[in-house]
Image (tube, rainbow, N blue to C red; front, side, top):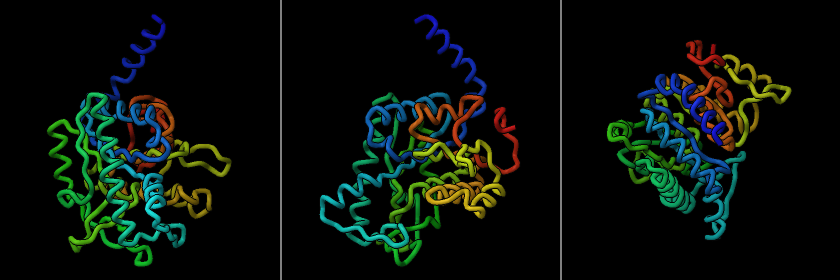
Length: 292
């Protein structure tokens, strides 16, 4: 038992330089995947966010909720239609999306953070025009891409010591419209508008992999383009790397794609030498050994 306490103390001591380095930093975390449906994983994620806030960071949580949306659509008898692998979102579907994301999922995450001693407020992109979107593809209906962001409300929450939890539902240029926005896309847009220090995309894979299936720990935008052209980056990883590149272009310092199923994944990335997943950044040097 004493050995465990010593190991814990040593870990905290080694994390101190990173806590100091990230004091005041904005870190946007996209939360989704299997962890959302597991109570223990949800509690662990919430503790990580509370710890980040406690040591002076400004975490922002952006979440998805696809499985919950699918479940309610099925229960309501609303049939899903897909075009090129993407769900066509008609008026009935977007109403279900808004109900699930801003109600059920958003408030569950807020409650989990509060249960761990933190302060959190749930928002959607429609609140205070946080996200204003336009149609991404007319064939997909009310699936939107952000074109305007108003992040002042998030800065106000930082000042109050509150963690924002954001559902990726946006208002349209016509205020009567509602758009469903991909969670990664929304997180990238918000991170860019905040000029965040980090954007963490928690997913169900270990990171970007090379042709042999090994995780690539460091990538430049040029390397991402090359691997995509070669077909090494493919399938569901393409939209994530596209989000990463757009976020970097908008002013985010670095983007990390990492496995959200890994215990304390966000803390491992931020507070250890080893880090986690694949970091994508421009030529700017970082302070941890794996980034030098």
